[in-house]
Length: 218
Image 1 (cartoon, rainbow, N blue to C red):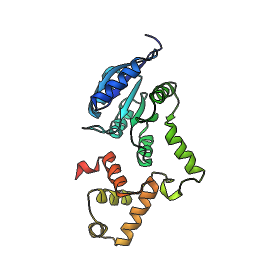
Image 2: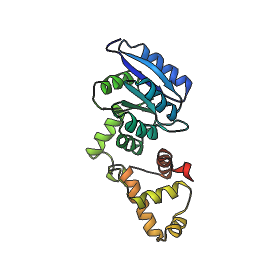
Image 3: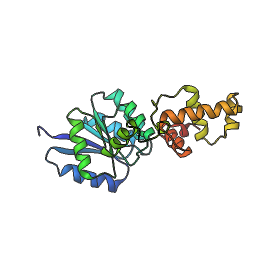
Image 4: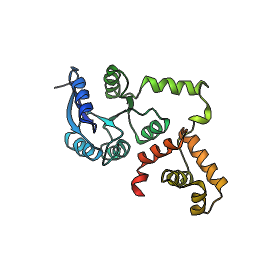
């Protein structure tokens, strides 16, 4: 049918997937034409079905949403990708925007937000969940500490290496010995990387490492 937005739904939880499918299919201008339970399946189904939009969960087995998005951007450069997640961390947002997503909507938002996001992205515009818009605007208005998330998201190779080793569980002293650097220098690299990526804790570093696939390489 003309005017119908064809959607591929990539979500590893069956119950959540069914709920989203019911919501989407209840709209007169959109339809779920395919489903995937992991990133690899999302790429395979997208290539086969050629949907207008991929609704992509971040946390999926085999291949997470970030890596799947990066691959799809190369394989299907014209596809619209809308990220669906519970994560509000700046690190997630920065990495996904850099990977080329067209929109970012939170699972905990009202169902109407998802529908609005789909229509916005389909129309060729970017979409950012209102909750995140408020945080971003608040930061630029000076309502949030600059050191807690105003960075560019661009870390150096050395900073990335330090973050990777921290995520693997090494102490600053152990990292210093491995890289032949002082503990003070390691702490500086860690601090700079966390500032750039808007990280507040070690948990944020581990989450970032998971998105990058670093923990799978250990």
